[in-house]
Length: 235
Image (tube, rainbow, N blue to C red; front, side, top):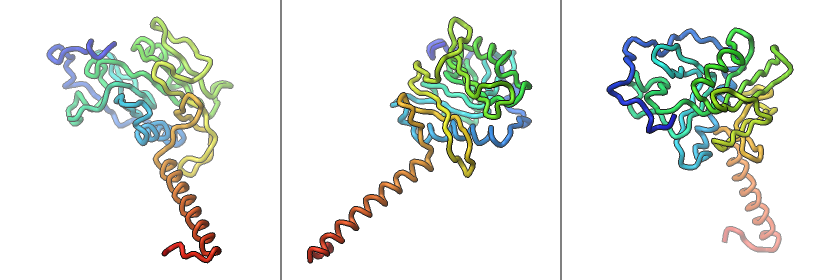
């Protein structure tokens, strides 16, 4: 669905009595941190998509039909849309496909049990919604021998992919072993075509600090050499 196919405002569904949040969603700590690791880096590096706008969120309802309950992915990414300026309006506080003109491009679900049916009926509903890519991440490996599965939508159904480079939107996903917010684990992260992870804001700041420290060290070394030659580096 392209933006020019968006439903006109005067024929949009009546959402006045529609519940857009229920405050009962429950996540475990690993999932909560994982969601933040998938949202914060792209917000800290918005130029990843060049000049294209994007809407990236965790645990926000996606409504694709007025009389259907929403799907609430752990994380979704939608290119060429953005949060409306007046986000206090009810129609702007969640993801209404008919308002934004398109479904999300990527949905990521952290799978930890069978209750969510992430690889069953929910997968089929995302396919009917025309979400281009569906990613299932199972960090605890309680349901099978996989950690990461990726699917691409084709003719209304999902076909499993052999990798996790999302060609249509120019970004990929990769498993990364490292420390995030004090916890060493295997995490799911956005990456470039070369496999380099997209840095968090904290990682960007640390890299900048390291560059500054190296530059200061070089200046100090040069000053020491000048002094050894009998020259005053401060003159």
